[in-house]
Length: 315
Image 1: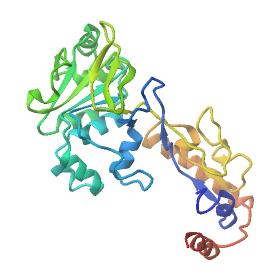
Image 2 (image 1 turned 90 degrees about the vertical axis):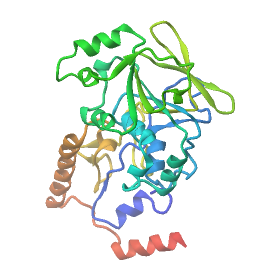
Image 3 (image 1 turned 90 degrees about the horizontal axis):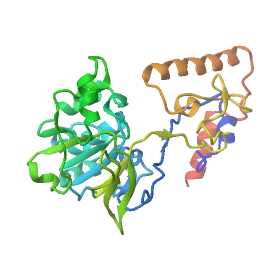
Image 4 (image 1 turned 180 degrees about the vertical axis):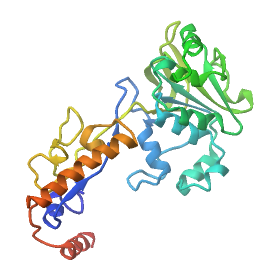
């Protein structure tokens, strides 16, 4: 879209078009050094190991021992899981071949999950955390740098997020030690700590973060930000920059009869399967109502004409 064909051409050859393009980019941290080599988005990392055609095969290098992931949601935990998993267990999945090869060469021994707020406000689900606890050869540790962290975990009710961290080792981390000194790969949960700067020169060297005793540097060769997603304007459609969504009414794109949106590009990056089902039902309901009412514009050309158009563009 926007390269081989335009939104207008797509609409002209079909009775209706539904855009389900999601939120394709990430939110930024807004800190110095964020664009330094070695600092990238979790969205790029996920696209890399899923062989997205717009992400270079060498976009991610894993020749460092420690990686800091900024974020406390499911995406952050999933990134950590991929980074410390035995590549042999990933070989039977749909992971891209180039990513699997890089993971086999990986020197990563430790992944730090950096959360701005306390464990009671973590956004990940119990299922994602359980997946980490079942990883072979991987230790999980809570950095006990602030007494509020342990207090929140101990005081949490059985259904609260912080309770899921009970049973994990808790101790203050000495960041001057090499990540490989324990012999095992590990994931460190550091709560109540926000990134201030990505430090380094031609490449990332460390992340300066806040903590209970002031600021400190966590040595790291790579930083991944996983602090949320944002929609990208689909070429040729109206777009609200403030919300990162396409303006619509019940899924009908404003000013574009026969064009509809669904999912995160419709309502913003929030909600899981249940929310998406309700969202899709609303959009499809609007489309069917328009079809019954005869409100869909008649296409100027059919599917065969569209295929000919695309083939000509690709020559």
